[in-house]
Amino acid sequence: MDLLSCSYGDNRNDKFLLKNWEGWPLNESVIFYKPIIKFQNKYYCFVSYLLVQNLQPILENLIREADSNYYSSKYLVIRKAYLENKSINYLAKMLPGAKIYKNLYYSIRENGEQKRVELDGLILYDQNLLLIEAKSAPLSISAQRGGVERIKRDVNEVIVGAYSQCKRAKDYIDIEATPCFYDAKDQLLVKIGDKKFFKNIFLINVTLDSFGILATHLSSIKAIGLLDGKEWPWSVYLNDLRVISELIEFPSQFLHYLQSRIRINEFPQFENMDELDIFGFYLKENLYFKEGELDDFTSVTLTGYTDEIDNYYQSAGGISEKKKPCQQFTMGFRKIINNIELSKRPGFTIIVTKLLDFCGDSREEFAKQYERVIRDTLKDHNMHNFSMLFNTKASFGFTVVGLYGIDKDAKSKWTSYCLAKKQKNKINSWFCLLVYVKDNHSIFDFLFA
Image (cartoon, helix red, strand yellow):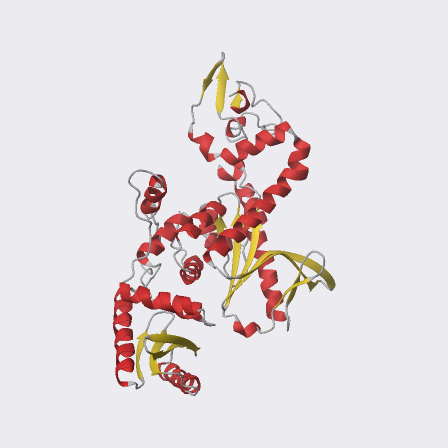
């Protein structure tokens, strides 16, 4: 109790008081590190939530007070390594079978000089490439209280710093003919030969402390000039990443959430959002917005979408466990997704994430037409197909072709078909799912135009 307690007068300390502003009410305070007050050998906790809200800084302050040398020379290094390892582990859990690399080095030319720079993590999964930077610096107490300069400093160090490092790695991959990454001993870890193979590159920043709306409302950071560039990173608190990794059902679902989540940054109307509210909204509503749907809104706040998640975790291990929160799919649509996921054919995540873009009615219609095509192909051994067109802001078309047995010429023929459909409808992209069926077995192939 004494370790967590302060006494009257403890704030009269140069560590906490601004010179010539000793009576300023927003001065630093010992109460954030020692939230219990000891008075006349009795203990009082007037602001009990500080014990939980500031648990990490309280414990770290105890370590620092016990051994400042250990804290600076070892603990901070351990904390950074812990964050990096946990971040990679949670991401790997959602992307089983991915190629994962940690603590990579590469060389760039900057301001006329050759520099060796580092990247915390690189994950290759199907046609997706994830660049990861973990930042363990906390959000300072002053920033939590609303100190503008401290907010800028902390955001610049953690979120913007991580973004800059991920962006630097992305630029290196874009510019170099054959990007190569090495370990600390200069042994080659990964060599990216065919850059065109990768359709998506994601920039991910994992933080050890929660940055709240500073991480979920990146458009405000960009508005004040702290974040530049066209790309948006995903800045996520480690514990939120853990929860998401435990609720994600299949790899492409995570990649689809990642795409949708990053796109939220393009809507400045969203305010005061919590990462798990966004994820809960994704599970319920698919983070899907029709073109112009938000034009009349100046502010959108997501609330109540963590209720099912909270109930699930609060009841875990209890007498009456709650159902695990998940997206609702019809049985037919879920079966299609599962079969494509199991195929592991190159491009399978691109197809599944595009299928997940469908809204509820479209998913049901797609499953219905898919079953018809496969049934008819098995019945008469002829080719059958159907197409669906989506005139949204990101317009695209989707064709499914059922073929009996392997057809070596099918890929070339249907590539031309997709290009023609794309040009005729004047849309951004066209996707094609080739399903070779025989004796109730299916082999998939994918085309993108």
